[in-house]
Length: 345
Image 1: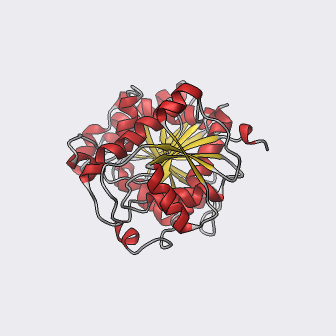
Image 2 (image 1 turned 90 degrees about the vertical axis):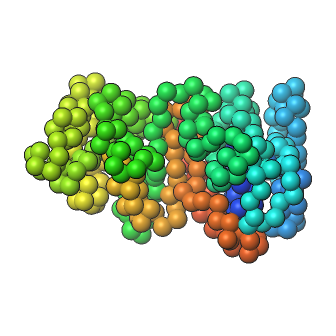
Image 3 (image 1 turned 180 degrees about the vertical axis):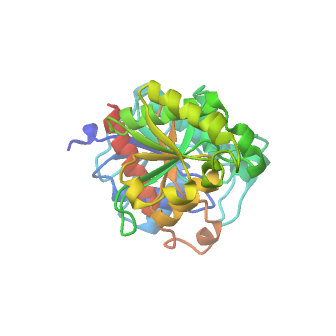
């Protein structure tokens, strides 16, 4: 396929002291025949790493100003474009430096702009360290919240997914009604309007970004045994069931609420395109066990496509030197983003 027809994927390389730059370079080079990878980070630092990883890897740095004036030009499959976002301080692998926090955050702004201007078709984010950005004097709670704020998106949905493997007969997708909340705060956050909007976002993105014409969504209960007819809690009766019924009236194929402890079985999952869990560990513990490092984080509801790896910065691995990090999750994240970009087009 001609390079101009391959989906252009913006890869933010994340925390420079972690494994993000290495896995971004290695994955981009590995998939350069399938996508047009565009790395976003410090061009000089990435070029140095690329040479250490494999001298055959060729990067070409370009300034943001040049892109704004001339756009993104083709480089050929033997050279990868890097949008240069210079770091402030020298990088020591495994050691965080808040002086680089604002530069790391700037890569997200550049990634957003690259999609909004049509240079790239999707964003894939390597892991960053929230503390470094906060220590740099910028209040930051995470990729998802930042992207939502910058794109003026009122509600987004976090979904993790993994492909079929030796342990799964079919792909597994798990979306969350609530994300990073203390468990004691979850019941109050299960509200009719928010939960309905979550189902609508899931349904829309499964259709238009993932190419599933009639998405089937299974919804968990909040309480053990899905509340057991009110004896173990009334959230299922008062909120979750009414939301599901209303969603059905809107043409959304949702069902439940199901007890979460029995829902994640092949006989149920084979009839589902996504499971909506009520809180973080209720759904993600199962998925992360099943994915074995091949999971991908997808942000639903944004006006752009964003995927990410399902792991952190792994500073300890980075400190050991190059060659210890596994790029499997990054490969999957890039391929999923590319497929979503094709579906959206």
